[in-house]
Image (tube, rainbow, N blue to C red):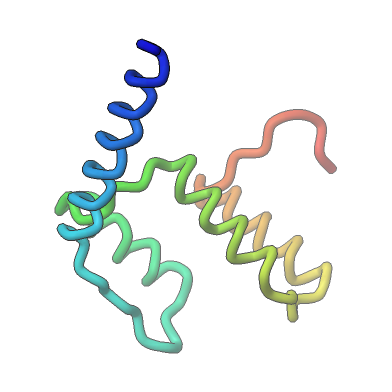
Length: 99
């Protein structure tokens, strides 16, 4: 009985916290044609201002979900070039033996 009561209280608390969180978010949309660097710069500004409450893990999950739902138009060579550029800028860390 105590377990069910605890679970109900926990569930109600998380719904309340979730509702409160969504009320404080204002939607900001970026226009078409922004470069990756511009979007990353805007994200950093928003993080510094406390407007973004996603962790790095949450951001990676959201990006992964977005990428799974669209088809790529890049060639393999273009992807390799992008990975090399990101690694050189320090924006991508690959661990292990990946060639």
